[in-house]
Image (cartoon, rainbow, N blue to C red; front, side, top):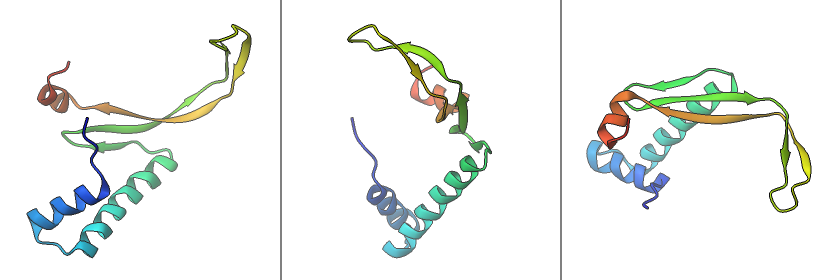
Length: 95
């Protein structure tokens, strides 16, 4: 399994668009900052042809400790989720 790092993304920007290393990193930071701000403000982020990021609010619920079986309260929380677009699912071969 390959991990794409910030350095990998910057390298692609430098190679494909001739940007400097500094400009590449600035662009990546700006993109991720905008995505993060939008999600923090409760807005969905849709990247056409790729998918949608959104924040879901999960209510508190009763769960169980898998080792002991003792019931425990799982607190309410907000989680970030990603849903790939139909076009992206088709490209990677899933439905």
